[in-house]
Length: 116
Image (tube, rainbow, N blue to C red; front, side):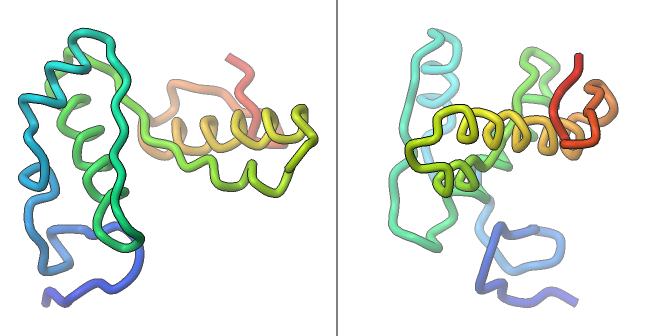
């Protein structure tokens, strides 16, 4: 049974939702990616940014042309002026998300830091 999700990324199998990839012009985003350009997805809180990025990651990985990874680096905010701590937090997040989304292609140490 599906329901309305009110927090966090949507899962279109479980939740009522619009297709996240239909919320932006996919061909425009793909063009930027092909050109190796940066882009910003800017919108208010709770409007589907994470869901869109997760759907884009899946789409890109499913094509086999790209290996894409979504990661959330909000945890680095607590480091404030401690750059080393902030970088460790970012790398840890990347390692955890790589393991969760891309499988066992990466080896993590006990602190969830990427070894290879």
